[in-house]
Image (tube, rainbow, N blue to C red; front, side, top):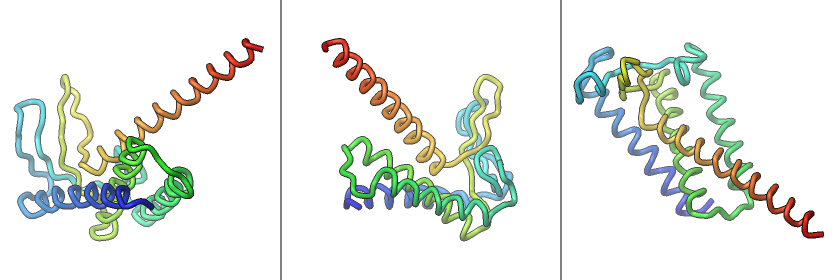
Length: 163
């Protein structure tokens, strides 16, 4: 793995743990601090599951799935590959997010969530920085993959038409 990737993974996981630590030492579970009235609050929630509390109470399974995900990311995107900087950043953030939530599960048996948005009357599930580091790079990788497939298909179609 490249030094850049390791730095990105470390920094994203570190920021995640610092933010969660601030919530842990300054708030009680269930307490909420309004930041922007009727839109954004810091709300301390202990999530014993994955996204949207899926697999709630299955901490060991979620730990195993996190380790499997890290290995899959390594095999698919990193092993014997040279990545362009945007891909490197995306994979680094993704791995850092997985590690951030994995650390919580190993230390506390649950994930600490705190970002609480109410958008147009819908109270979105509370999440954390690690979740952002997982979702946004995943969307980026999906977009790039689909775009590359479309470009390759268009390119091969042009080659066939040229013959």
